[in-house]
Picture 1 (cartoon, rainbow, N blue to C red):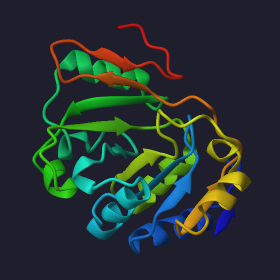
Picture 2: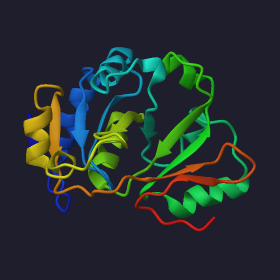
Picture 3: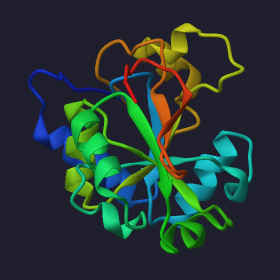
Picture 4: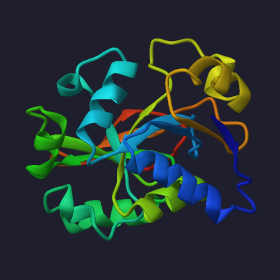
Length: 205
């Protein structure tokens, strides 16, 4: 199912429709401020497993990030962070960044893993932020492509995404053309923040 949402005039009924899909355990593809991504309700184990299958990996091996609406419930998912890291997050988000932070015990339970870290995203894209806000909790997410993939139309063109993924997911949101570059990943689990993948986001640390 392909649903067109105008990012400049967002129809709240379509946001609710996307949230309904997520609550029923469905997977959606949606625009961000970088490449298009796919995701599911963080608290639906069956959906998490299905998302991992789409990436052809076991859930315990998946490196999913979570998209939050804002920083207000961050402590539910990550351990206490120092003031300088929190300041960095506040300055950079919403934006095209993924911050790797030390996870609470909730995260390993959700992902059937021993992972001690989790990637946090708050994209500068109102469509996905409204979906997460309406859902009431984060969504687990992964980009459509892997680093090894060459860039193809189905990463950026919503209709090409539809042709490629319509049989695999419950909803594809056309929010306009996506970008070719992924987010910049900053690891904040050590003594100082470290950029481990330079993407579209520019940051001086």
